[in-house]
Length: 289
Image (cartoon, rainbow, N blue to C red; front, side):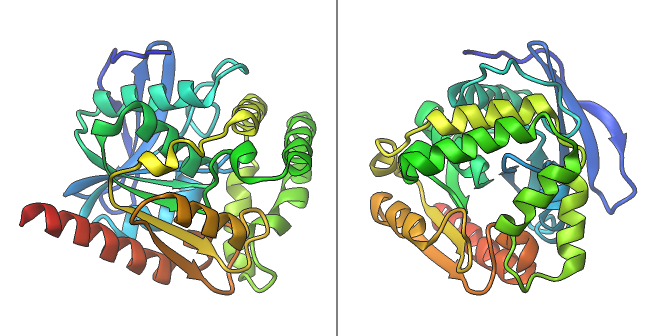
């Protein structure tokens, strides 16, 4: 699928520093996104639950002093319109490319969480010249590429079932798998608030696309600097997944934040932000030499 630029972004600014909530129209899709700061572009990709603001609100503030931070709502999430339920991971990647072209983004740092990490890998496969570096957080090589078949089948059937139920059921079932038992309640509640706005179509489409995805063949071909960040108590992408990704991506750096779960940027924001800032700054400094 190839999506081409149609119109430039528009929207209303939020009263939150210089952060703005914006939209752009691309071949029939209205895509929402958040933008803050100035500097080298850092594109943030959320997981298959949540949205741009619920997942990346901290990074939109803390990293905006050094980078232009752009967090999109993927099709079927947040303020974006729904895709066809047959949308593949390649379709999401091409949509992301069209989105970045519409915003006149050249080579960008790309950071993805969970499903967003797999999307970042597929995006690199299809549009490598648009990627400056990769930050893969709690990432898989697709569910099929990283998990046993019975786990893939369970997660897919769970997502399809939850897509037809009230948001409270989604939260009740998934929140315990996203955070460690010691996660502060206010952080968990803040993330859960974003989950209440889920789109059933978006949940089903991302689950289907990720259940089919096997990105293991892409990992050895990655030639840009790559940082992997995982939570030590992550039950969704456990340490074996992290170590497999690290072993397969040449020259990658693996950071495990102990005592946190699948959403380390929310549960351990200071350490997460420090690791990302140090990595991205080193990439930019090495390119300036």
